[in-house]
Length: 512
Ligand code: ATP
Image (tube, rainbow, N blue to C red; front, side, top):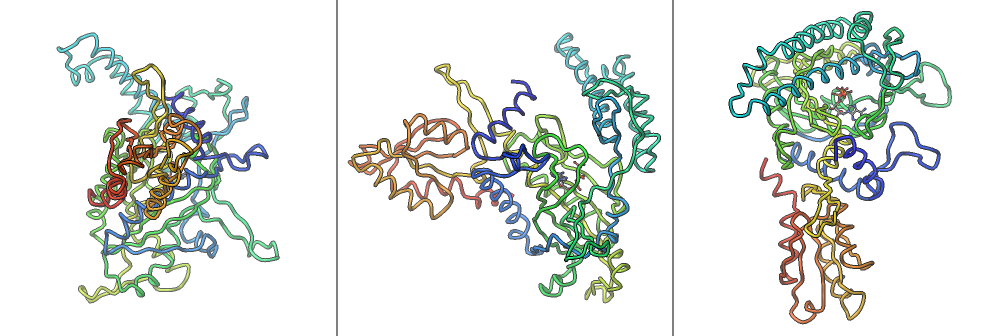
């Protein structure tokens, strides 16, 4: 199965097994908005919980917050979102489709880089053991030609983005002969800026003074509460404030399932530090956040750092953690050194001081901020696309299995009576009622045992425990492992401690 097929499979599997549904489906859906089903919501809660525990519970110097989605509209003026939260967009006149100009160019660059990798792969096969890859990369005329194109386009693109030179962004698209994937033509409009914030109004009157924005990030709620939190928790710098919650962006190109949504959830942490120490903290948070991702147990080659081409107006250093989704490496989390831009700007617009008195320095200052910002929905997509596997078994049949890390699995264990009679359901319910006190488990007595195993595999349940006639005789049950499909007989009294230890988040937190 190639990546495109795999991605399609992830989308259809998510719907069929109750992870993710298109929003308002019976009304033909609402573009780039999705609802989470029974298993999706469990998975999402578990990821959020993993983030919250890793950030707030494990760090004595990070505390939580839950600020409102509606905020005073001047906040978005101060943050720069009213004036600068724009994407450069371009339309193809033939297909009438709208694209982000920066994305078209980035995709072009990625395609060129791909061509180089293909050349290298071919040569590797051709030359075998004698192959000198660095030499080949630096001397092969075709490769050096592509590399020069990449370098030239990239530096023009970087300058165009930094200077918001919309005419040159268009010219790059023309010069690179980028075509619309739908119409196949190069008939492009000019590039324009488009603000991504949704607005609404508060109160009965629809006056412009009542205009509000749906927050495009959760971070500003943290900044405007900085002193409230610092004073009430008596935190000393360096310290962080974490929050999770919905954010809204009127994305121009909303594609790729839950990767780019118009309503999504962020998990953000702002870490307040003494000015001058921010780069040290930025590097340390980059490491910590990558370790959090690696701790899921997926191959480490699936993650990489990418420095930003264009630093946002507030940042003096920024990198993304990228994950290899079925459609390529894309941002899953951003780590930004935001300087004192936000707090200073809120001081200016609100007329209130947002300073910290440092008892060690015996002076007050506006702290610098290092931010970690991760999309919860992108985490769900990463886990679903990495976990879903179509396995061919020894007997030639196939099974769909979700190898979700145990501590994140929506259902931790399923308790299955072999038959619906002879007291087996009663015995199974006895066990189920104990397990459900720990975490979300399921009791299932419908269909054949084989079908029930497959159903649990498809939603990623790590353990299935079967109660049969032998259970009634010697109090033993079989426990089946999702990944290996191996079955073992153990005493029913041990199930609770064995299974719950294996699926418990504490073990994952210990590894951090
Ligand atoms: P992109 O470049 O993909 O648009 P971004 O750089 O604008 O993302 P940030 O503003 O840094 O994203 O937001 C932090 C995180 O929020 C991202 O790393 C991503 O995981 C998530 N995120 C941002 N926009 C969306 C969206 N439209 N849908 C889902 N998640 C999103």
